[in-house]
Length: 251
Image (cartoon, rainbow, N blue to C red; front, side, top):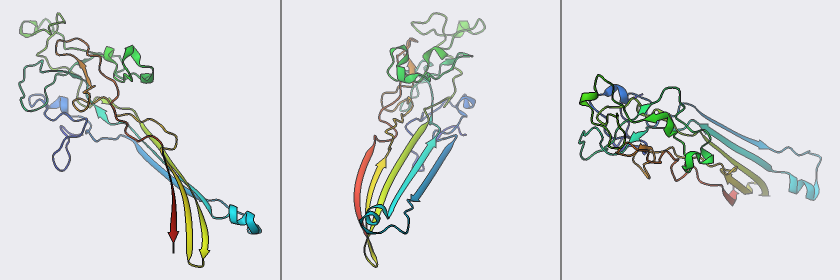
């Protein structure tokens, strides 16, 4: 948990918002930009057993094989839904300009069926119906400046959808390898290797980001209308399946 995250060099992460509102520190107190709530890594290697009674060509072909694999899984990285522009007129020049929408109670902020392009948004991960622009109440209506396209709204009111309140898709990856050792001399072995990175060719997506890339976490325009954002970001977190073959001399 923190109010702002950066690397040792002070650079922001791709899902970071560089400058939060100093007058509302509670809304930025949230999981760090580099937070992974859960993570697991399992690896194994197995030497395929062959009967010691096997001899001749069959033994040469079947002996010396090993298979291995690495399975990795972790929760997605967090991101923040935003209103584009500077609706509160903070005039934070030289840094990120944005507004915060309101979270509508009882609605899931994530489209779990994002692969079906909900609402016509390609890979639409953020559910825009779970959010609204801040609305005026009778107590503050006289001090509100409405969004141009949303009567009764309050553009100069800070919404309650806090920092890093959405967690991106989980990440899964499987690497697989198989190898065979050929003894050529008493102290020398030639090893053949076949390695499959992201063997299942599973697509792991980056969450909608506030300002990097296409700024897909900005779900409302500065006039209060829906922007059609919320889609998962490109490029992928992991590369597509990669296969490589190698020979290694061990002595």
